Image (cartoon, rainbow over all chains, first blue to last red; front, side, top):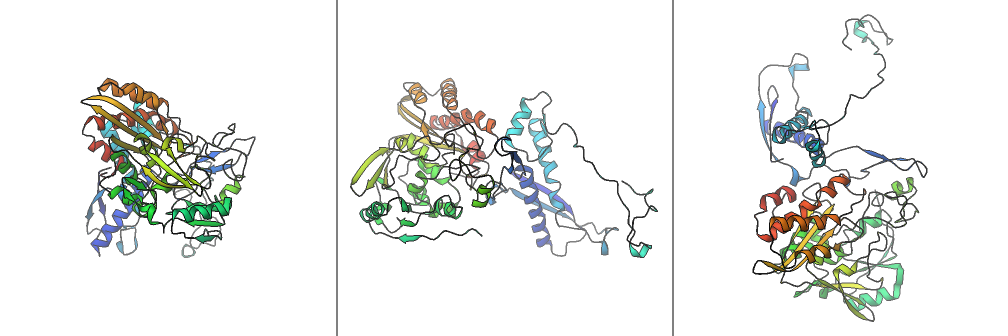
Amino acid sequence: MPKIWIAHDIGRALNPTLARGQVIGGVYMGLSEALMEEQSFRRLPEKLSGALVHRAPSMLDYKSLTALDMPEVEVALIESEADDPNCPYGAKEVGQGPLLPVMPALANAIYDAVGVRIDEIPITPDKVLRALQQKDKRVGPESFPAVPYPAPTFVLPPWEDGDGNETKRHAASAVV
Amino acid sequence: MLRLPWFEHRAPRSVAEAAKILAGEGPRAMLIAGGTDLLPNMKRRHQAPQVLVSLRNIPALKALNGALGAGLTLSEIVRSEKTPTALRQAAAQVATPQLRNMGTLGGNLCLDTRCNYYNQTYEWRKAIDFCLKKDGDVCWVATASKRCVAVSSTDTAPALIALNAKVILKNASGEREVAVENLYKNDGIDYLTRRADEILTEVRVPSDWKSCYWKLRRRGSFDFPILGVAAALKFEKDIISEARIALGAVASRPFLVEKAGEFLKGKRLTDEVIAEASEIVANRAKPMDNTDMDLYWRKEVADDFAAYALRELRGDDMRETRLRIARQDI
């Protein structure tokens, strides 16, 4: 990864140096996640133990980027003047937002470079090689995992006459 | 917080004095030089020697006249202009700058073998009922194995094996010279042929080889090797007169791939010769699933790394490939 270019819609940067630092920090976290960081487990043989153990139980095994692996980051702060209507004082954020586009950007860069789709992170050299050898040029999960989500419950806040119990009043219009 | 166990610290001023202490204390004692491997291991209770015999105050181990003193730090090895290329490239890629400033050449050669199931805290190891290498009876990497398959993770050893280097081992009654490839056994527990009362004092490295070292790891710094290829060649015009290729981090010991050396002898480094030699080297790489990265991928790239090494020695411009893999100029 030689370089990352990132633009962040910030509304107005009160301290541009600090804001740029936040964006670069976000890129660092995102890139580390995109390239290396992984919570994976292995099952010890059933008849001996059956225990589920981390593959990377220590900070030496759980890899994140070092300063040496961190590329140059070019930050564009988009000072749009437009307040965010959904936030107090119209504020916009520069917290961890800048880390979100890093993973898809990396996946797209790889697709652009060698024509393979890696649909899971971390994106590692062995996955790229495997995708190149595969007919559909893709590595990733075959389907979205079935998650048994419970039905949502709606509880109104006190200023809308909520008493702490579930209400059916807004359920119909809510987006689930 | 992980704490060190209690120990007694001895700081002899000469090799003879250190050897005498070692002979007197027996298995209670261990040698310590930079301590970058031993002290973290002691915190995790891999080793708990009652006596540490420090080698830091022995000036003879810092010698840099023809032979390399085992007490030279890896940074000093990198900085020395006399260091052969393979050794410099290997030493420059060990761990981090801070650790290279403390860690020594002798320490890197005697580095404990490593494994995902071993290099963890005492509590973690206890939770899986320990492992064959320490305190337990099962090897979790290969449960049918009677032998510990922890990985030799030294970078300098394959480089020195390729360079046909020798080490001097001294004890209270004398000294012996051992070829670096004979310093190791393919056993994750008993991985050194150094006897407990011996001190590795110096490394004798011939300077007439053309050599290089290529290291595979996930990041450009910090990480232990998951594959190391060292190659050393001698040429008569453009014909190879002698060849030594060594592999690291794919077994419990670093080793010489004799077949590749024999194959290369008397040949020119054409693309076909490099491809065939790399194949011979890669066939000997038998990584286990107890370090970083995908096991099959590590096996698959072994021939590429051998080819990089040979192409570099042929004179190809490998700087871009090296920068991509090592992430630094070395």
